[in-house]
Every structure is written in C-alpha cells, then in structure tokens.
Length: 113
Image (tube, rainbow, N blue to C red; front, side, top):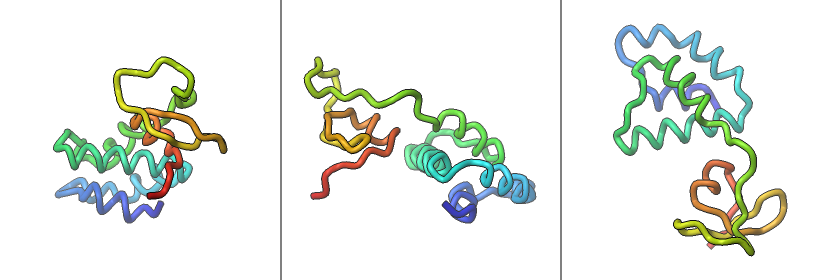
C-alpha cells in the first residue's frame, strides 16, 4: 500500500503536517499485509466516528499494535457455533466456516457472488 493512501486517510491538520517524513519511515517499516490491516482499522474507526489520534505518527503506531492477527482463525465447521453468524471462507487453501471478525482480521478469501 502506498504511503500517500494512509496520509490522505489521516489528513493531518496544522502542526501535524510536519510529521510526514517520520510517518513515511514508520509506514515503510511495516510489511504490506500489516499496512493493509492498519489502514482498514483506521478507516473503520473514522467511518464509525471513533477516535483516531490527530497526530498521524501515533495514529499509525497505535493501530499497528492492534492490527496484528493473533494465532489463527477459528474454523467452526463441525464445532459448536458461536453466538454470532458464521460464513464460508478459505484459509490456507481449505474452505471452512468463520466469523465475520476472523474473515476481516485474517483477510480470508470468500466466495464471489
């Protein structure tokens, strides 16, 4: 993901515009998959009207720690279903039943409609 995309999403104001160089170096230190997760996390927060740090450096840094998936998604195929809907998705080449949260968090492939 290009730095310009996260910079435009964050749209820093005032003195925070001067943080561009530091933010670009921070952003460049993350692999593409993590960048995508950070971007999606921040975009989701903004869409829902949740707090995003106005300092773009801290906005990226704060969301980077939370954007890493932990472990593996839970396949509910042949398991007791959770109290949330599950959907068909592919993980490591195998189809299973996953929560929407896991589908988004792990960027699982879903069937095309």
